[in-house]
Length: 132
Image (cartoon, rainbow, N blue to C red):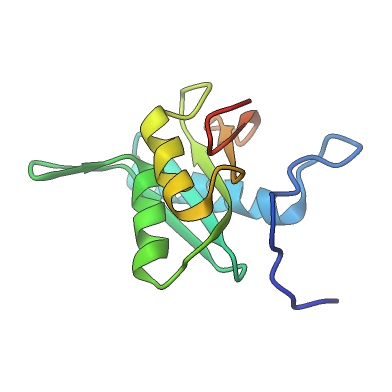
């Protein structure tokens, strides 16, 4: 088994439609972060070295971040300079434009952003550049 970084786009769905295990891990992390704090959203990102970061919605009087923005900020603050994939668990069907922008800032336009419902089922996948 290789310990090489998993550079490039997420391996979202195989021929059988199942998520790649690394992407399924992001969904699990995002769901658990959301559930732990009963937050509106949970998110997880994987950096260019394969490290993962998770976060929830931040809603403070002086600071508001979506879960995905918080996860990207955590990755950046930890030294990540690239993202391979991102997941947001939310009631929405598509990622917010600001979320796509945050992922694009660190990951580039081709970084996949998976949107999953609270049940963990992926509803959509977008590129950080905004396209479907």
